[in-house]
Length: 271
Image (cartoon, rainbow, N blue to C red; front, side, top):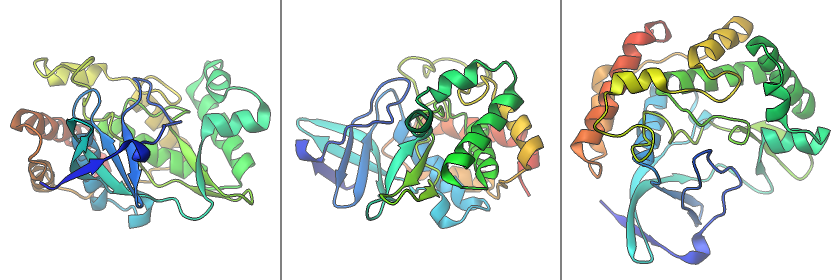
């Protein structure tokens, strides 16, 4: 595989830091690079984004990632690259920052002071809709919750959901991105390779409006309908996973088995 060499001037500080820390990230000539940090995040990003090609999402509604080996200083990292989706004076602003700018309060704190998941979700959707004027926010968040539940993305919280904003105060939806915390990718701390994957699947918690993926997805679907359909097959999964041959066979096999398990659980999402 081709290896890219990156330098200190390419480093980008991440204002959307993960709840588990901050990956090394770089930008060079319109391409973003992310190094693996706690496990096989790059493999997860690549596999999830390529499986999103087999859904009812349009190409501009998600970011496509490709595996990449990255040389930085004296180290070689596994990771991914993607093309930037930010043009002109558009910028990413997280929901936490957006809400704080308008109301001078923490969105996370406001949400988790509510005891009911439905109340949290309705408040979230209405607040962001009122700020941005994006009227399909409920459907958008429901798609995110579907992706998170299926791929077990445990890192979707208010610092990690965002919209695009330009200098004139216009807003657009962000494409789906930043799914590297999915598929039990954190092998360093929470999901070691030697542990039983099915037990660990049952232990993964969401962070958006509930700690239970299915609870927040059920509430979202009841409020805003089922907005995402999956079209991929087991062969699609196998082909995509095994194409990432910079990752060890045991990691690729684990990802494959996790997705097969989720396909069995969420049969209703397939057509």
